[in-house]
Length: 421
Ligand code: GMT
Image 1 (cartoon, rainbow, N blue to C red):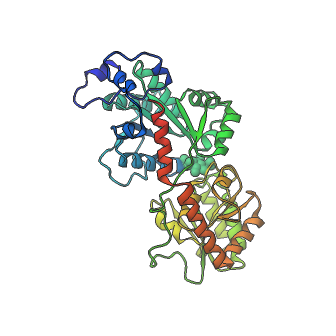
Image 2: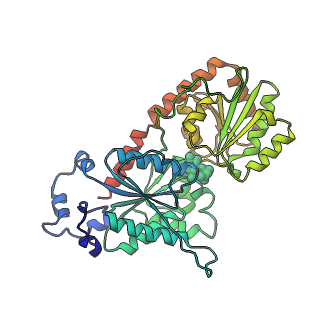
Image 3: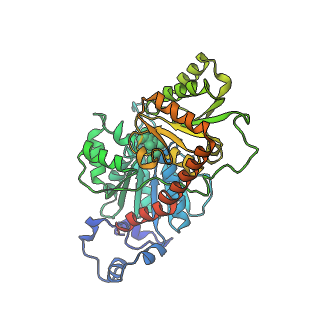
């Protein structure tokens, strides 16, 4: 590390010349420096991964897939010996296990009457700089482009000539919904293009980012992942959401417009006419009140359970017979993968990245997001044929375990970090 403040700090050993993006390599290493020694020695992944590595992760802490991915990635890295620093507005909700090498740094925002809105992204940049300097971080990995990639860019500029790698993972609506707003388009484009490495959670999202923002930097697709030991088929027979004769249709989301909540209710209403079924709705968001209202209009209150936000999805998802996700846009659909891992077949829309996760007719069924009859037919088919449902569930779990395994995806993220050295 070259920053003056970093040199003065002696309390903890500094890591080897860090986080070095291509731009850093252009500067020759000082003879006798750690970096020169590092560059002279043969580089193998094994050697690199044995070193203590220090990484900062920024994500949204409230309920949502990007925060889940960021947190599970951080925990997995910590188990591999990384020192992981979460830098966020509050403790990420999935950070519920203690690992001694996981630290949390809360971004505090000073308010002042002059501010119309307190500038969180600036407070975040400042906190990033502070943590990088105090702990010798090599890489900042931000999840969700807006505003985190811009905050990381600013932090990196503030830290110059110290070198810091910035990795941005694109998750979905940062590209498809909010990043394309005229108020944010240019800063989103600039901060993606300025990141050292960019990853996207599906091929769909990579293509959409390139098309929409004209990004020329290579974007690696690293799929979201699941731990099949955690999301496993039903274990506790005592836990039920419906009486034995009734089936459970489940939906979980942040209840935003893209989740197509009215279709969930409509599909349930049609299915209910033919088989005894309970609808279990997990999560909260702007569309929830409307959904509750519609359920009351249908007189179906006794058959619908709105659980609100829940922390332990691994206990709830296995209780479903079918999981329903008719989103109008979905870059990946992490919750669908978690359901699959729990051996629950998914009926979903063929939007966005969902066809990369769910194979139509093999691990679930896919329909156009507005095709209510299609969703109804597929749900009825699964609920009416236990052999089909169980077979599909087993295949779904196998795909989750084999194609979306946490260990493989964490390997791929580690390769991204290694490429910055
Ligand atoms: O935009 C959202 O819906 C929130 C966002 C999040 O932070 O949870 O979800 C996106 O990221 C998830 C994790 O990568 C994906 O599984 C979701 O598909 C994606 N949501 C959308 O594309 C709508």
